[in-house]
Length: 319
Ligand SMILES: Nc1ncnc2c1ncn2[C@@H]1O[C@H](COP(=O)(O)OP(=O)(O)O)[C@@H](O)[C@H]1O
Ligand SMILES: [Mg+2]
Image (cartoon, rainbow, N blue to C red; front, side, top):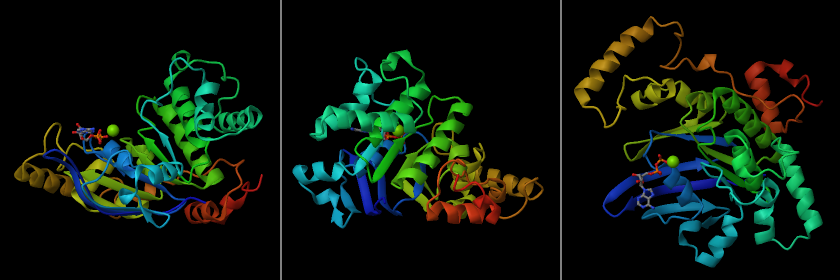
């Protein structure tokens, strides 16, 4: 069913370099959350800290009632089994075919017989649309297929939590759209807690229940998708709209006077803008991505479908 992750007052630095400080948020069980932020703001460091690969300086990460920042290596090993992680490049072994790559965690962490392993591997390959590619090497397939193979591998131990590090990086927009649909479909099927780190604004607007934004060593905001899409907070507005005007600069942070001027211009222009409505982002125009029609929607997704598109969305839900 997925588990809740509660992060409180988390701070991480390397030497004198503070990556982020005092990060507090709760990833609700079974929901999809997205973490946005410019490059180098420590999104990957955040994911690695959640799985216990990096130790924070301060703060707590509570999962299933235990603060994992205080666990010994042996107990941490057990907690890590709750996680599936899709690393940025898929992190596949180049000399192993897809079947062996995906079977790897099962052979490493369980004593299941090969017949059982085969059943699980083929089931997960089917879920991500890779049936027939079992004997391909990672170097022989497209970037999109590599991501899906990495995802199948992240699924084999039936994780309660899945972390995705820029699943859309390096993919063309059509592949990103397919991947987003796959993520939503998987969430409806396995009901784990998802955290997706991404740069892709379209994905961030359509896919999650919750959005967070890391900027200038802080979590600027974390909350329900609609709240951030409607937010007047300048950094949130700039990022969710991919604008040049705002506090986020090309290389470094901009000076305050320039930001103020840009925001004033933007404010004047925006009121005349086509989207109108509340906040700076026109949230009403971005519908939530729903599970594919063939997927039986658990109650959580049925509620979302009803809210998004009215009771008619029920049609086809039980195909
Ligand atoms: N193991 C490490 N040791 C020292 N510095 C690190 C380490 N990992 C990441 N960093 C630094 O932390 C910062 C954030 O990195 P990262 O989390 O990869 O950013 P993002 O994923 O948001 O692009 C960078 O300045 C990076 O150089
Ligand atoms: Mg990263």
